[in-house]
Image 1 (cartoon, rainbow, N blue to C red):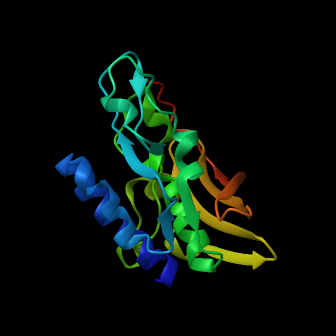
Image 2: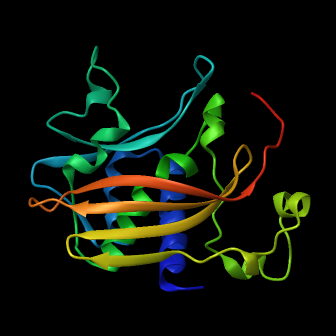
Length: 205
């Protein structure tokens, strides 16, 4: 287990506590773990949780100024794309990795019905997978030794984060995200994916 995977496990733990408590005052505790990230002055962090509405829903973090949009009657629910408008990211390998963890958070936060298509399984706890196969791996005969570890490469004002994950409707993917640092300390993220093992569970919600 490398330092990126250790930090990811800490992130998963604090994310679970925030979701379980549903206490908005505790949301910014996320930055105790993601300590290479910080809010821009005047910004707050919010969390929109999936509701059992329509044919599906997802959850996501967002940033906002002033009053929380979700608590304001008649206002639109904030979009997940607003997240990085209010976050400063340290220009380091760990800063880039922590930005990536926050970026993928919708895939590991609660989902409802069709929202489940984005669900991912990550391999951060490699000791758990070592020498054994998970339920998906038994179907495709893959072992943890065949799956690359997360990496971060810095170059000038950009970082490239690569991380594998499993999705039941895609298979084993290696995601690479280009993280470009803006002059104000925020970042712009551009994802790319490569299929390592194509798989479709054959189930449609």
